[in-house]
Amino acid sequence: MKRAFRVDLKKLILALATCGVLLTSINTLFASYQVHKNAFIKDTLHANQVYAAKLAQVTELFLQSVNSQLNVSAYHISKRLDDLPEVNRELERLLNQTNSFDSLVVVNPQGKIVAVKPDLNVLGKSISFAQLQKVKQQKPIVLDPFLSPAGNLMVSPTYPITSSEGEYMGFVAGGIYLQGKTILNRLLGRHHYEDGSYLYVVDGHSQILYHIDENRIGEKVYGNEVIEKVLEGHTGASEIVNSAGIQMIAGFAPIPMTGWGVVSQRPISSILNELGATHRTVIYSSIPFTLLILALILVVGIQIAKPLTLLAKQLATFNSKQTDATRIFAWYFEAANLKHTLLQSNRSVRRVIKALDTDRKTDKLTSLHNRLSLEHWLGNAIRGEVGLSVLAIDIDHFKSINDVYGHSAGDCVLKELAALMMCKARSDDFICRAGGEEFLMFLPNIVLGEAVCIAERLRKQVFEHTMPRGIKITVSIGVSHWQGGTTTIEQTIELADKALYRAKHTGRNRSCYIDSV
Picture (cartoon, one colour):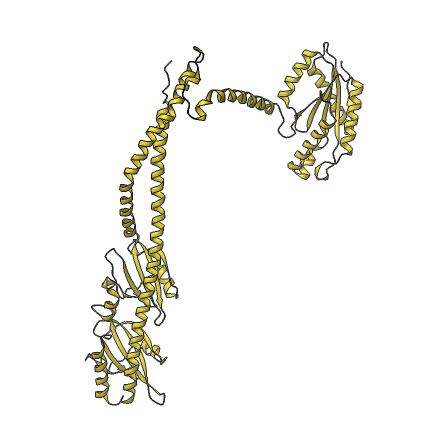
């Protein structure tokens, strides 16, 4: 016969130890990668949220500054609104004083433009009805983005002009272009990063006011959960997939003054690239130490395996040649006590086999003997030629117990009845569960008359006993006797079954017997 391939202990220990070190290193690196990935993403989420909040604050301050400038001009214009040259000089002063505006206009209460700087082809034209309705609130507001007559997409902060008596006289508005090298683009564009990070600003209608891609300015964005959250006034951060299908880390913050939202984004891929570079450095730096550990394992593994290998070789030749295992230098407990342990294990195996054999011959529910155990016991009884009586016991109307109380209650009744029979039995009596609610009780050296009395006592005890859950039961019992001779034990058991059948059909809750034939 071809000998099966076997690996020796030394190689096995070395292989397992090496695999353990390598797998542990891989697992450590993987776990470290995941932890650092989550930490990078968490830090980026926080950083983008803080950054978006900072940009929102800066934009808010810029708009407040613009509002203050318009407030001053509105005050001066209210004093000389009828003097158009003076109004134009005020607009020109404001335009030259600050680089916040690309244009300035004065609009009367009817929505007609009465002054403009620089000179544009909009003098005498009227603003849209929607814009007129919005400015009639007579408070500082920022008009929604619109296309100027010159074809420029722009937003326009406004400030109402009122007389000293509080009469509404129109408003002054500053135009801020959204495309090109404008003040807003200079304010926001300086924060663009080279790793794919960028930010954008949307108005209250999800329209893009600022974006690194100028072609997207004025575009409306739909179905973006970050934009929806920021326009609801929330500040936060989350992972999203942008309109180009790229996974991003986005932080967002609202601009309360205008209802706009600032979103700062960074591609997850840039984070993973940075993390990958870091981990490659970690791997390269850990290789020498890992090799040192493997070398140490090689030396120690050989020393561990050596006594076990010698002992295994001697045990393999144990039947053919007596050897002295004490000559092996066993420097640790396991090797020194291997032979003793094997002997102990053999005894343990025998105990387990015995326990398994007992378990095989025992009914799981009632802990009584089962049919297999019965066959073994009957064989011994026949060889001993000891006379015995047989009681065939059956619970009356057991099916109704299962139907009314459930099968768990029926199991409890079976176990309680088994315990009751065992309590009253002698040490040499044999009780087994024949199947379902049927039991067999064998009474060695008990004649038929005594057996009938025992059956009656048992029947009355069961009748008077209250089972679990308050259930009351009765039993029918058939009795027969075996004395040897020409009658077999199997025939005697059949006679007990017939006697039980008679007890069932003559009213139940009774004992009947049939003498041997």
